[in-house]
Image (tube, rainbow, N blue to C red; front, top):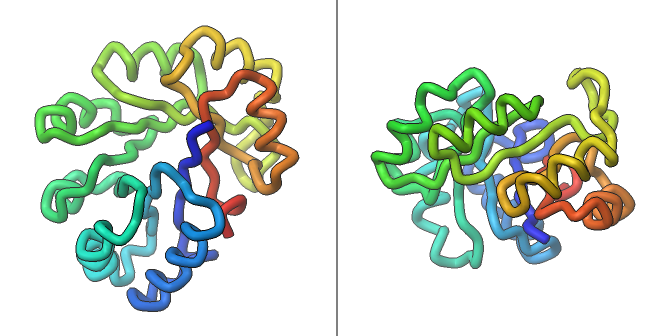
Length: 182
């Protein structure tokens, strides 16, 4: 099962060196295949992006940046994570050689992303999570997971091994989370 770690300044500081220290601890504990650097505050975003690129050889994971195509290209990130409002950037990101992950909330959005060339989608929220609306639930995710196989991973409310196990039993290809990796 793919583990996709998403960082957030609420749990990961905006101080570049402390960020790397926290990330290193988390990577040793959880061993994610992907790490998405996400910081909407943009405090030290450039510095952290540069440090991630410089330290990426120390990790057995692929680094993805959230929403910022310019930084993804500048620091040669493995990929970019786009929001459900950024579909228009999928083709450009692919032309620039990036692996593209896109947040989705409906099957129609999943189909659209895949048609545009996206590599992987997060489908959310699966479980209850703050400020993200009504959860879709495991049964809905299972239908999506079976239909789209290795293209969809669960996101939303995944905080413990209990939720990970439910996603696994629903034939999930993987999980994406912020709080699970803290």
